[in-house]
Length: 258
Ligand code: ADE
Image (cartoon, rainbow, N blue to C red):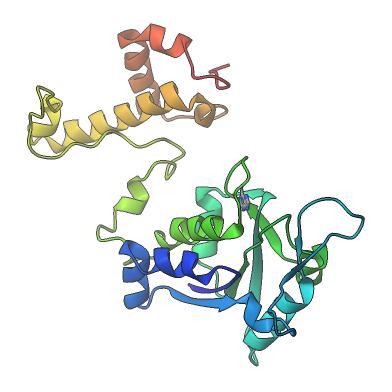
């Protein structure tokens, strides 16, 4: 995965990208990440990258030309780009979009907005995709860019220590994850489900599936809407409902089973 990041705040990106899995992914050659300071492409000595909005109103708008200049400097013969502008107006980031981005052969160019936004001609001129990481507004596109890259890079084989991790994640199967426990088996009077200590792999597998279904039913029932679950899952749901029918009557605010 090859990412070019255009930003006014390079340290936000470098600070996060130099840690943990993103760092390792780069060291292993799975992720190539280059950071470009948009200010380096401003023509004036004061390195001004923003201006007041046409039509008036508060705030500042990021100028188009320094961004176009930065992209021109990146272009190489045969090089192809897929442009991404993180924005609350974009299509929602999902596991499947993250996976798709992880398989992109073209370089991903992330353009991080700030202030009131970016001159609209950047998006239209580059036919850039807008991607949102959620229905809230951040102060800039850097954190969203990092979220998108982090979610994508996990799909690249070899990036996670355990190759099964990505397959077992929440959402991997449109279900939330099952609960995890580690040693010791008793912490402050709290135990571990006996089955996980039993060594019975078949039973553990069934327990995990059941708890993933329970988590999803309780916390994100919308993920199960319109899904045709296999008979074994239906049986597990039947058992869950028999065990705790009342829990499903109190879904979290804004989410219901119906
Ligand atoms: N920039 C500001 N808010 C954002 C969001 N919710 N998603 C992506 N980029 C953003």
